[in-house]
Amino acid sequence: MAASCDRAEAPVEPPRFSSSAWANEPAGFTLLSDYGFDDAMSVGDGVPLSDGWYLYNPDGFATQTADPGAPVSPPNVGQWRYPVGFGGGAAPATMYRDLGVPRGEMYFRYSWKASNPWEGHPTGVNEISFVIAQGNILVVEMNGTPGGPYHLIVNAEFTTSNGHLDNSTGDDPGARYLFGNVNGGNYVVTPGQWYEIEVYFNMSTTSTSRDGTIRWWVNGTPVGDYTTVNFDAAHPFEEFDFSPTWGGIGSSKTEEDFFWYDDVRLSVRSGGVPPAPVANFTSSCAGLTCSVDASSSTAQASATYSWSWGDATSGTGKTTSHTYGAGGTYSVTLSVTDAGGTSTKTQSVTATAPPPPPPPPPPPAPVANFTSSCAGLTCSVDASSSTAQASATYSWTWGDATTGTGKTTSHTYGAGGTYSVTLSVTDAGGTSTKTQSVTVTPPNTAPTVSAGPDQTDLTGLLYT
Image 1 (tube, rainbow, N blue to C red):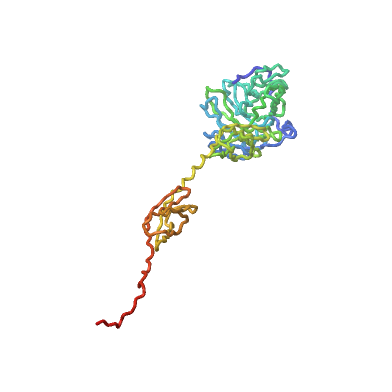
Image 2 (cartoon, helix red, strand yellow):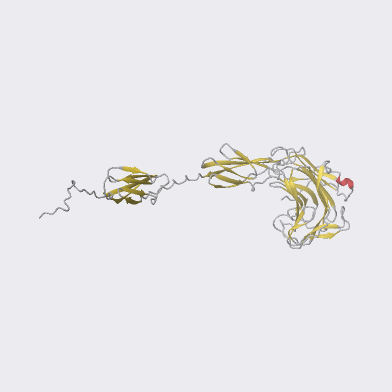
């Protein structure tokens, strides 16, 4: 932090408040907030107030109080208390508001008063308000050692390697403290009086160009006008804070002091600077199908999500899935596009082809079996008791050097006797045989009676 500076001082000007005091707000700006400290300021972390404001007030050092002399919206004002023993490098409380989208151009104004007496920090730094971004901080300070005098300056804590200022006033290009450079130099403030503070800033067009602007007014009087500031547009502002830090680390208050704030107004150029999206996604694969989810991306609600699957196909959607034609490792690329630009993310996914189905089990082998019945020389056979597929074939060997076919059939032998009949059953499962004996009997033949040659009937002849 910087100590107080010895630049030429403008005369102390009595406070003046009128409608003309707000004439420095640029034309065409859109009101973001006009807050009059009309809420009770409770103890807590993240205490919600009206109009989008929140309060970090763990010790209860910030309260709403009445000041009929408040210049804009009496009587309610916000009071920040620095008790005896309060340490340097800290703020009693922080009231903050998100700016909606990061802002590269903004105007703010508020009324502020320091208590009288006021014990300044030995470093000369008594911070009043902040505008914050990632890497960029714009601080309004009451600059001056414990006994004063005190000046209102702007501390431009920017992220840059190109220096901050290069004005014709001869300011150091590496400087970060912006002292009054118009109307006689630094503006002297007197504790115990209300002051209207107005600030306008517009960021550089690139990260290296010195074409940014910072202007501020006190009680309507121009105090600082810097138009060649390297104000990195890659880190636009996201939040406005009342976090009045008292100096740096070290030292502590030996008296009770106060800051008071009256009505605060924030306005912006419509649209702001949309942040660039940040693409990110998770994936999971089951077999050849991979599911992806880009919900972890940072993007506006209107963002579009497109996918390149790595197999010459594409898809869309915040969450979706894709089925690959073959197993393997593929590079999946997500592209997220919104008003802030396009962001991509590539990850590898592995799709696994399912194993081939097992071959069908071999068909069971047939089991040949048959029954037989014989009448005379003819035997009938029936293989219905065999176990076989419907397409099976049935062949027979009759045991007399002849054969036959069919599931049921018959055979007539030429002579009686016992014969070995063999059945062969064949299907896709193989061949099975069964042999049984059959006995055939030739039929009985009726006897033939022969009387011999005719004889003479000698009946009645009597020989004596």
